[in-house]
Amino acid sequence: MGRSNLNAIFAGVLALGLAGCQSLSEVDSTASNSPTYQGFVGQNAIVTGSKHYAAGNFGLAEKSFRAAVEATPANSRAWLGLAAAYDQLGRYELADRAYAHLLKQEGRKASILNNQAYSYILRGDMNKARPLLQEAQALAPENTIITGNLELANS
Image (tube, rainbow, N blue to C red; front, side, top):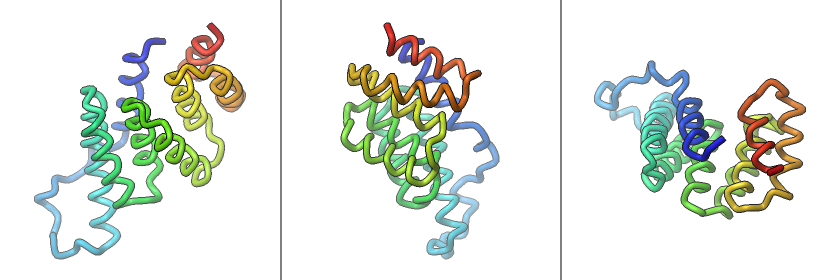
């Protein structure tokens, strides 16, 4: 599976379920310290980051996802987007930190392990990618993206 296909799939996964967001102009700016406002800011930043990521604007995607993480630190989609943007920018040390945070927060989920493994594929480190992909595949054997990444790591 090619890098552009995976980027498109990632952007689609991030955008899933976000169509119901309101625009910023509809939010009362006097409530800027409330959890509801912070949640809205985080969701808005995720939508923006997903659009930038899909368009290949990884620097802008990183900025948006970082804003989402700062506004809603428990939001896994924000962390996943941030890690993926760091990968695309070649900022692997920062991507590693984001994946470590995700794994601590969410546990060893197939989607996180797959993305972390793909990060190693981007670096050319198939020895680190393979065991992560094997674990991800054991958790989600029907996932064709994981299967494709495992084939890529084995080739």
